[in-house]
Length: 455
Figure (cartoon, rainbow, N blue to C red):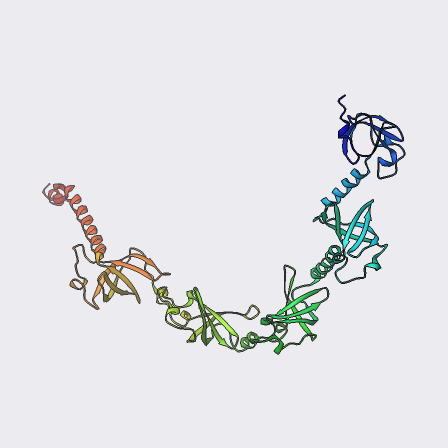
């Protein structure tokens, strides 16, 4: 055995193999000048009847050297500090986790409380004793429920405040879960801000946003509400632990008043208050604003009404949708006019007559069944056309064939050339039939009756 006595000193933590166990002591081979001895009282934090309850020969244990007696050839060791550190480490592992423990206050210091749990000391700073200020002396001797929040230099820092805050959140959540959208309650205004007023509803607070105070615009909350005032409110929103409240929802809205005198189909006049990418907002009465979608500007998909008007302009519109509860109104400009494409009965391949309305460089506009069709320059004649006016005249009636039609997009294209080609093809087909018939005709077919008379 290689003995290294200079490496054995008080305070060292060494590892050894158990070679003997009695009821009162455990003997370790620690590779020193003599064995290490751990007596029962230094072997376990908890009371035990015998060391044999915990270990057996051959086990490998760590222990701390408490005293070296060269005269009696003894190295006295203890596992207590190691066990305490292991316990402290376990409590340290609880830091930041949602685990609670109970510890008794054994001492009050200037900075906080000293508590013990399972023989392990813990420290609770004054700032972690409660949500509100309390007298530390009042907590002496009490068993407190707390949480480990930090382990600093092997000191376990605990908090009772975290537990109280968690319980408060639980109470708030339980109350919150009982609340229902549409529920009418009374509460006291606790705070007024520039964006609304907070109203207490038990453990929770709800917000009456400035937009929910009145049906009309409120410039300053304090002009309408006062801190400490009791108000009746309706819950309008419960989302992400936030309570949205409304005072104006309990009042008759401008929308309800408006709906008493107006209905879907009515013609109304309104002022444009905002232009957007896909529509415009129009105020038809104070704080009653409807939407005219870009789809309802005109029956003609090429018309951009938003580009023809400005914010502040007045429009005559028709109500096409009205939802008072949702405060939504659909408005339309196109429904005040007639859609000529409703009467179009054409389909691709139809032959139809039309009147030339406009001559363009790329073709001509022909009016057919009350709508405008486009006759491309390449579809006017089989011959090359350099200028449309050379072959077509304004208000001339022409026969054309339908090439393509899209009622939704107001598109109709026609052709004179293809109509002529179709007629030529038909005439040629008739001619071929006549020729084929002529080839198969015999003298008997031509003079059959005469031959019979001759006979």
